Length: 120
Image 1 (spheres, one colour):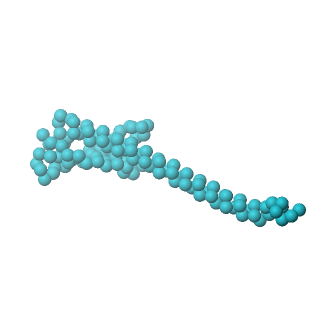
Image 2 (cartoon, one colour; image 1 turned 180 degrees about the vertical axis):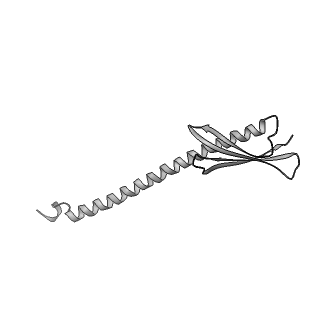
């Protein structure tokens, strides 16, 4: 047999397998990072929806919300969300500032939203 017909040596095969395994491990880590980023993004989107719903309720209610802090729970997308709404005066006497923050079950703040409404 000539050198051209012999094929790969054991060392060449081991080096090729090592390179392939490093590439496969890098792809697995990338997939894990992508999955966790997707979960955080989904959580942020749903929390943003909860915050917008609370702000819309505050703005469209016939009676302006009372000044001060209030909090509660909302259930959306199969999860429980804790929200805090802070209604404060602004420099303009007829406007209220409404700050809404939404946190997940662990207490981690996920979304916040600010709106203004006529205080009458």
